[in-house]
Each structure stands twice: as structure tokens, then as C-alpha cells.
Amino acid sequence: MERVFLIGFMGSGKSTVGHTLEQLFAMDFVDTDHYIEKKEKRKISDIFAKEGEPFFRELETEALRCVNSAIISTGGGIIERKENIEIMKERGMIVFLSAPFEEIARRLQNDRDRPLWKQDDGARAALFERRKPLYTEAADLIIDTEGKTGEQIAKIIYDYLNKE
Ligand code: S3P
Image (cartoon, rainbow, N blue to C red):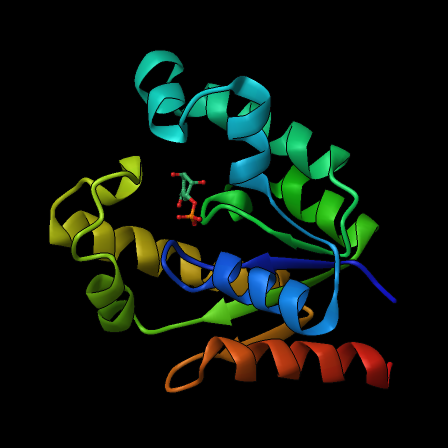
């Protein structure tokens, strides 16, 4: 079965869906942010604060090359580098979990951890708008997640993989 990279904006449910695929279908799952935090032995927010975003992006690209699980969830900024999209395409298929900005803002309303969510509403919305076409263009499969549970989304992915 082909390896799957889950992409999408912060709060679009990538790691939840990855965990669900792991639980329901016993698929091996890893999250690149989690992989980086384990390797670096510190939080993403610490890496951003001490080394800055470009350093984090280096770690992210390295992680994409190293992880071997069947299901890989990625950070929302993975599409910021063309190279990352090429790596994902070479190593598997890309599934974009698409959610409306309002839904994401609702989910992340109490989030204090994500460095790029710590901006005013206008800057958050601008980041979302700028990235949306990048996710869409990179994706082999786009799932509109609005109104769907994690289980329903996981099932769509599982069925898609088994159809191929
Ligand atoms: C980021 C998203 C985060 C994390 C980092 C940067 C981004 O991951 O990789 O804070 O640039 O959108 P999630 O998408 O899992 O929140």
C-alpha cells in the first residue's frame, strides 16, 4: 500500500486522522512535528523561539526524508518549500485535509503553542489564503473535512488506498 502524507493548515485534523488510521486499521503512523520534538528533545515553540523558523524548516525537510511510516502527518507549513512537495511525491501520495478558516479558528481558539498562530486575525487569514492553493496544487486527493468526523475521514483514505 502506498505511503500517505497528510497535509493541511494548522488545526485541520492531520494528526487526529493519522491516529485514527493507526487505531482503526493498524497502520503505522508518525507526525513530523512529533518526530522533530523527540529528536531535538524540545518543543517546536522552543525551536522557533531560539533558532527561528528557517532552522525549523530544515529539520522539517530532514524529517520528511527520514520517516518511513505508512501514514505521515505533517506541519501546516510543509508546503512552504517546493523541495518538500517533491520529497513527498517521490515517497508516496499527498492527501490534503481541507477545512474552512472559520472552523480552524474555532478549533484553535485556545491554542497558545503554535508560533504561527500567535498573530492577529488578519495575518492568520492571510497565511491561510496564501497557503490554500499550495495545498490544493500539491495534493493527489483533497478531502473536504467540514462536518466529517475523524473516523469518516480515515475511512475515506483507507478506502481510497484499497481501491488503487
Ligand atoms: C506550522 C504548523 C505546526 C508546526 C509549526 C509550524 C505552520 O504544525 O509545524 O508550528 O507553519 O503552519 P500543525 O499544522 O500540526 O499545527
